[in-house]
Image (cartoon, rainbow, N blue to C red; front, side, top):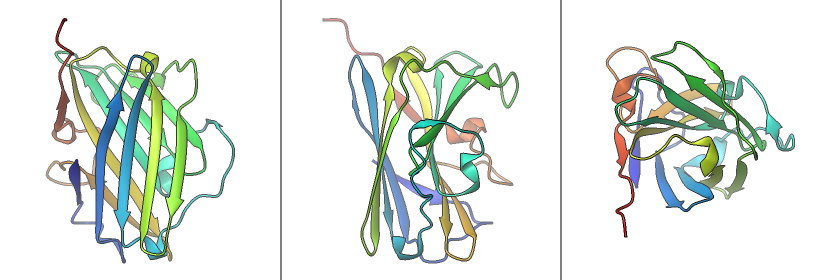
Length: 178
């Protein structure tokens, strides 16, 4: 479980904290969870049905950045409470961007109470690079009035930039051979 840090240049209105973690990894799916505390003013995009879409980061969106160890390229997954998603591959830092092939779309589920919201996502394992990984879990949180805050395991100095190597602060090892 990671306590995500809010970028100092973009403070939240009411959100008190965001946690994120990998819930599970099996031969078919990677499952993830984000927990938002103080979510009473959270803007949740309306359901739009499952499907690929660009620009999801302009409102509440949850993100995974993942790179196979030793590789310059990485994958970015944007996951929306609207059930829309995006998957991109990059050959290097913000270069060589292309849609990443995903045979079966991610599954996104949002649950929201008065002060707490939980976002769960499952990404097909076939869309992910081989283990071991460095990864970043992040979130763009929009609150009423258009207030945007940017949350990540770690932030680089300067402006918010989830693509920066500093944000790939999580690691996941390859499973041990039996």
